Image 1: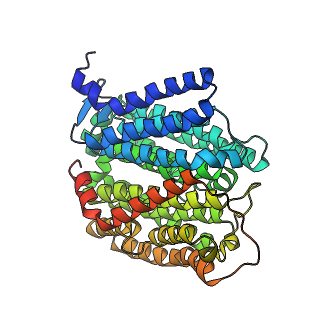
Image 2 (image 1 turned 45 degrees about the vertical axis):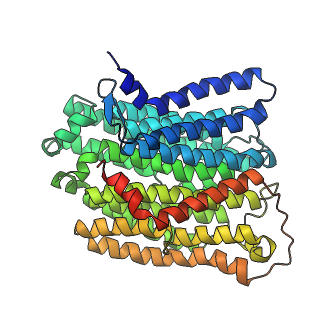
Image 3 (image 1 turned 90 degrees about the vertical axis):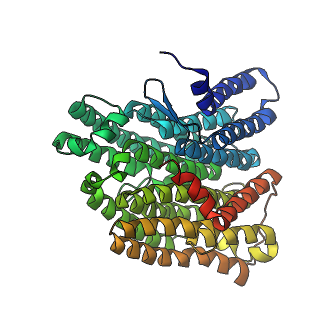
Amino acid sequence: MFINNQEIFNVLPLIILAAGIIISLLIEMYSKKSESILPWFSVLLFLASGLHAIWYTKDVSIILQGMIATGGNVNIFYAIFTFGAAIVTLLSIDYIKKYGTYFGEYYIILQISVLGMMLMASAKDLLVIFLGLELMSIPFYILAGMNRKKAGANEASLKYFLLGAFATGFIVYGIALIYGSTATTSIEFISQNFSILIQNVLFIVGVLLFLIGFSFKIAAFPFHMWVPDVYEGSPTTVAALFSTSGKAAAFSAIISALFALFNGPAGNLFTPYLAIISLLSMFYGSIVAITQDNFKRMLAYSSISHAGYLIIGLAAGNHDAVAGIIFYLAAYTFMNLGAFGIISVIEGEGETNLKINSYAGLGNKKPLLAGLLAVVMFALAGLPPFAGFFGKYYIFIAAIKAKLTWLAILGVISSAISVYFYLRIIVLMYFKTSDEELQIQDSRNANIAILLSVILVILLGIFPGSFLDLITKFI
């Protein structure tokens, strides 16, 4: 098998990260200053990989005997994962010391999980998706329980592991049935022959099991049961990674494996399943989030409703929907990173200040943090002119074009419900007072990360068309 220099150059984001993981291991083993070197080396690693991916999006190719795709929207996903991970790394520098969970392997495990995400996004073979999934998931289980001394972290890790393994079983069984009915795991072959293959019952069952398995990974109802406890029990910066890059990676795998769903009437067979779980996820997440008094649990239920909005795009099954999903994932990644980042700064030692009421009067105590959190809440609520509004808009328009107007209308209603629990935070910050003194440890690194997230949310809201045009070139 011969790989030319251009193909090696195209796959450089993966090579950079893989080489960086090996270098990070050597730094951790042999350098006494690894605690201060590794976080900044990780940030540089993520930025180098992400910037290369963005700069060379036009270099589209399929290499390694049709196993890996490069360029186009694959590179856009690379950028989402790596920029998101760079922000998580900045948030983590001071947070993991406060949380009592500094271990040298923290940043190395973070790097490995991102490499798994990138493999999932670039996969042109079902086995590569599975390899990437495991490379992402196993580090996630470890990161959730990184602080072994906290019972909540141990519980989060165990729950995530057990239910994650259960979901992986669905995916593997689905891949096995797809292979049994097609005699191949090549996504290219499956896409080209999709309209013929759906006449085979085994193939339909395999695709359905594949979708169900990934419904766990994207936290869609009724496969969401792990989400609130895992987000609450995990370190806040780790929960930020789960809810953003982790979710984006799962959607990238679905888009990669089932692109034929977006390429003709054959995909309509799965529309009822996708429409139902979309509907249930949107309303369940929005309604239950209203009742929460813990900020992290509120964002956990919020993530279920956002999964519902994204699944509208899968149900629509057209090229506009694919573009809408990718735009929404980019916007949602930076919106949620901003929200979790602010929580990580305000969170005190011993996991204090996590109640929503702790934010009462924050506008007077910390006006900059309160202002940034207000922008993030407006964006998550889907209010213009922020990125969250355009993400939902593009997906709803795609649904209307696919004659799923009823689902788009219900999505708007669910979004209107969610406005309540997002704006409740803003009301508490600016119109309520608290007698309790809020002890906040300032973190320059975290503040930079939060500010970058908010700037990206605003830029995606001001220039949505530019980013959408970039995405649609490669669909």
